[in-house]
Amino acid sequence: MTSILTNAAAMSALQTLRSINSGMEETQARVSSGLRVGSASDNAAYWSIATTMRSDNMALSAVQDALGLGAAKVDTAYAGMNSSIEVVKEIKKKLVTATEDGVDKVKIQEEITQLQQQLVSISDAASFSGENWLKANVGDNTSVVASFVRDASGNVSVKKVDYALDASTVLFDATGGKAGILDRETSIDGNGIAVNVNIGGTTSTYNVVRYTTAEVIADNAAFDAGGDVAVGGTAGRPGYVKVADDTWVEAIDQSGATDHEIFATDSGGAVWAIDATKLATSTIPDATVSGFTITAATTGPELDDLIQMVDTALEDMTSAAADLGSLGMRIDLQDEFVSKLTESIDKGVGRLVDADMNEESTRLKALQTQQQLAIQSLSIANSSSQNILSLFR
Image 1 (cartoon, rainbow, N blue to C red):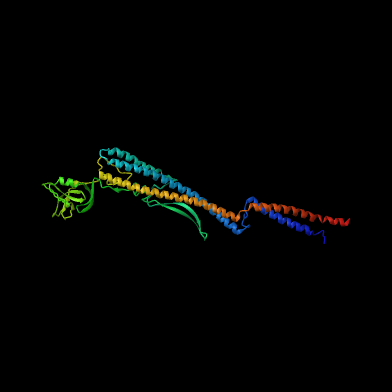
Image 2 (image 1 turned 120 degrees about the horizontal axis):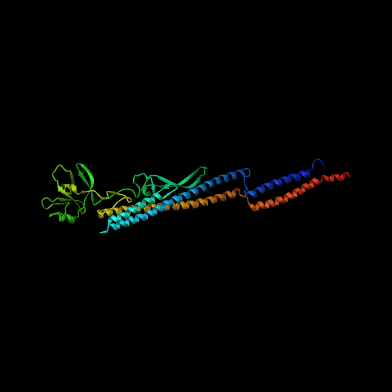
């Protein structure tokens, strides 16, 4: 049946054209945006996953920035530590030079003082963005942001790499507690040996003048080589109490006396009063690597103690530098991993929502052809009504 009121063919052709135009709009949107899933209406599940992972990638980008900041802090601390190690090596060299007979220890100390001041300057300058790991509060901890993590339950967290600012890593204790590697105090025996001496009922540690066995023999007519006491041979001469190997303290026998002011006891039980004039205080009782002073009177044993103190500090600094190097390596590895992780997430999101441009371009060409055919079909359907007029001529 042919009707001039209802053109079924034209209606069908129009519906087809509308469908083709809708498909073209969708395809053109994919071609222009490059996305197969550009909104939640395209695919709610994929759109939700992609949106979440893009936000995580932005967080990972911030983590990379934080890793760069952390790497800069570690590099600054390592540079300061490495420079300080070289300065401490020089101090050790100067101390060894000072052990030579006839050298001017005062001049050597002038050089050491400059090196000690350089250590302070290096530690003060080893700061990045206001954070100093060489001059810090001993006992504190610092950290570097390492990663952003989302677990299977959707919970997120930021992971950090911790670095302890303790007595084995900090050069100078900013609290003033002298607990750092370079400012901690070390007891130096001085020009004698440390012994416990009772004075008026109170026992304290004192340095006493060091004597060799030969000196004791020379000052005594009779000497008991097998015992711990060298007995004075002539009237008025004191005896000596052996307090360590080849170390003797000038003393007077007080056996049987009840009032002992200053005394020591030998292995045989005899009580000897130590000559108060022979008690000595060390020229360097407590020293720090960055603060000791040697003088012309500084003895060989004192220098030995100072060299040992500096060598111990050098070992601690070397260990701290190794820790910083390991931390720097870990940060570099983490930075590389985060970079690869970011790329992997981008690829994963792309597989979910990116459009296949080859496929879309082919579809667009096909739809353009279909559109032209649909327009022609609609034109034919509309012209069929005109054919009815020929029936009335």
